Image (tube, rainbow, N blue to C red; front, side):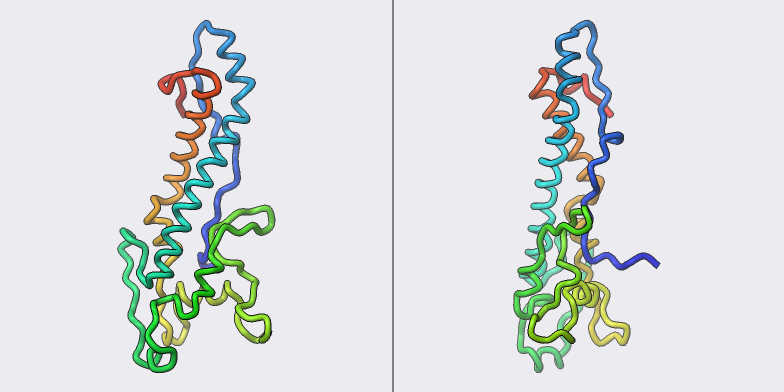
Length: 194
């Protein structure tokens, strides 16, 4: 069974799927410039896109956690706190009792991968080794507990949907690569396609 999603992985740069077809007829100077600049244009377009996409996604996720509301446009509804939770912890926004969870959400690097989420193996408190990890807390908040005492309040998939999904990232990468090639070589937009 695949591991439940509690972070959003940013795909690695795969040059083979991002090499555009560029139509140049009879202008060898421009053709040489394109060849000389295509790899750096792809890298710069990819980096710019991932940065833009990540910032937008982080904003949606953090706003949801800080405001206690599901991501806008995701079609998700979160159950309200149980009366027993309010008695125990007082009134507070969903997913945001202390603010610690929200403060840990960011761009993470792990095993040569980049993802938007929380540090999975970090403990919530250094003073008590029996406390759960942030990753375990994220799974509980996302999917609820097996006994049903804590209902699931989906955040990660709905946030990805709200930002436009991974397809938006791919489109953004292609758009920024096209812009980089055009800026560096003078090639027109209608000469570049995938």
